[in-house]
Length: 236
Length: 256
Image 1 (cartoon, each protein chain N blue to C red):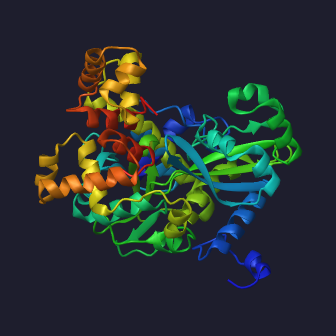
Image 2 (cartoon, chains in turn blue, green; image 1 turned 90 degrees about the vertical axis):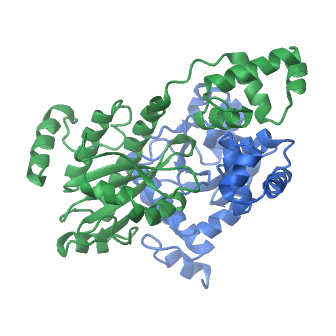
Image 3 (cartoon, helix red, strand yellow; image 1 turned 135 degrees about the vertical axis):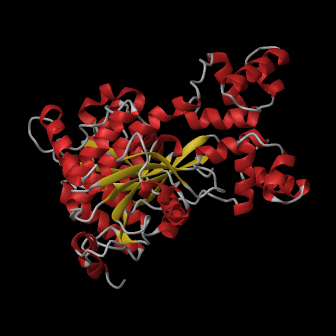
């Protein structure tokens, strides 16, 4: 990709995305099509017993992200307002913040409103095992076309499916090797070390060493915790 | 059932059950389909909307070892169509791998007629694949439900009509359908007996890496009681040991 101008003109509405730049122009175009003012693509990673939001791509202004904080973004993405594909989404309306439960404080709601996120939709994107979410927001409530939004959700999934490595890097969360993942999967199915050894056709010592490595990579204290971490981050 | 019959049956149903505006509105079907026959009916509605003559819904097994499609139902429900048997066999393997990493629909054309093939070739976000069943034309939509369940909704027919715009709508409806089916399915393995709050607390702490001794200390119980809670929850979840109990509880959404 050459200059930013060329980038924004490139037609990313169809077929494949080739670069990080295509991703940006794809989302800018999509947001405009559905009547949204801004978008944010977020990957949620499970880190030391808490969920962390990693922003992959966004046109929110810097201050909005700083002031609102990634915690709130993670809570919004994992909260009840997030819609899976095919489910009619409900928006987070800053003006109705008291109804949004513990999600927003009054001050945060005021900030969101001022910063042009009066209404935010949070959508789950199902691409492989990644925990990806996209937020579309508008400065005035009701500006976003719901039907177009639901179709856009699928387009986002398609677009992200075409760039798996890029997304994996951005949300880096699977540190395991194939063998380690396989071993951990069988242990999560209740198999003992000896049984896993039999299933995979390797020695018990090898299986134990794979599992120990997996435990270390997750900084877990035992097998159960390693399994929990792997399931939470969608690895097994 | 022939294509004409399918259309007739479904058209009759539309008049009663669809919303009065005629056109389907996205998201309106979310909470229906509590039984498999309901789900079959809903899938038939989608099939009629894209002019497909056959359909099928499959689960993609979570196991890394078995790359197979597990048929849930198809257009011949309660029996099984021939095409479904092909798909559950070896020809589904490549599609399973695809569904696990991508949401992009895939189509194929193998019946020697040009009609639906041209429509498919014009789709921006869809790619061609090897036929899932010989002598058929079709399109397969990868779908996901909560807790990592993965599946595939397949439509067959020589004159499937789809545009870029309807593709997303149809796929969204497939997602909603699969989510509903995935919610029924755990019932097949026998309903999990009610697990008490205390048992869940112990499981959650186990998932966070605590040993029985630590759990006992944290919850102010004796080690023996903590172990008993864990044994009970393991039995209720139909698991063979704690590791599997933790995995099952997480996958079922009993603990976060």
